[in-house]
Length: 431
Image 1 (cartoon, rainbow, N blue to C red):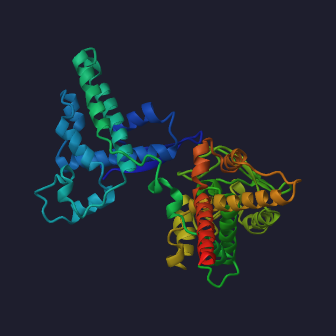
Image 2 (image 1 turned 135 degrees about the vertical axis):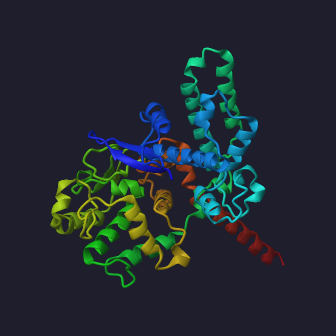
Image 3 (image 1 turned 180 degrees about the vertical axis):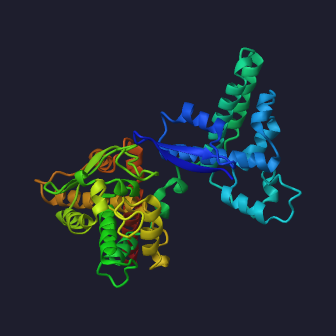
């Protein structure tokens, strides 16, 4: 079974590579990654692309196909092949593998060719399926042009390759247009009280705290407090270095350090947005200082790297920076499990939404005070968007607007209720 491995080169570069069933790197996929993706894609983006190509290889296995051999013979995809791959790309890889493993009727193995026959198999979102097909189209075009390089002088061959790619892309499902409730990330975000609850759970003195050991309890409490105070992504928290904290000014900075040579993690957590400096309450920097000076400093291994949050459990990773899987499985999930009815919708990204919700409340408070005190300058819509972009590291105004939708809806509901109350009271007086 193909699997993705992450290599770390001497210069710090992370290089995801697809290993075949024989334990060797997949030649054509590695060539594709090296020539087409390596210079322009992040480690995470390359890994996602490899996942899509693994799904394509699953289609080959199910249908008894070998596209490399077929391309070498000059045979490209037929229209029926494209439609079959299109349907296959809508299926969840893990669910499909499970179906294949448990299916008793192994005679029929073209499950992906007809979605009507695979009711038990889960599907992915249209956006995910579209990304898959786009990556498959790019890879197969590269494969065909590289294998048939000597024949590209023939116009018919080049045109056939173009037509194959065009047909694949034409069969991408339409994703969300960025409009409507389904495109609003706030519709699935937990209410603010859920975040208050999880912060109370992870407090190191809380009787509900699910973690073991005073050092781990304190570390995890600080992690959640920083996420709540800054709206930083989980990857940005895990990539935070001591030098990024200004204890005098009371700020925390997000710095982009892709392929950092000092990071020992194969899957390096990195900032996905623009660099920025976020002002925080003195209480946050004091908590960070205590963790770094009184707890992290006790671990000799932790002194060999600059990352703030480290593993306190003794063993192979003692003192090393926390990995993303550790954060999700050993920090976030145990906290959510204490009160799943309220907290099950909380994700590491949810704190970002809550941060912007609280920011809206603060801006409202400033504007309300400005009406009563002419010395206070109100914050208009343009300025508000600029503030959000700066604090969140965004380049687009639309992203800033999206993260304010929950608050806008609340205000709209409030105005509507006030209007309804007004007319209800008016009707009562007229009787």
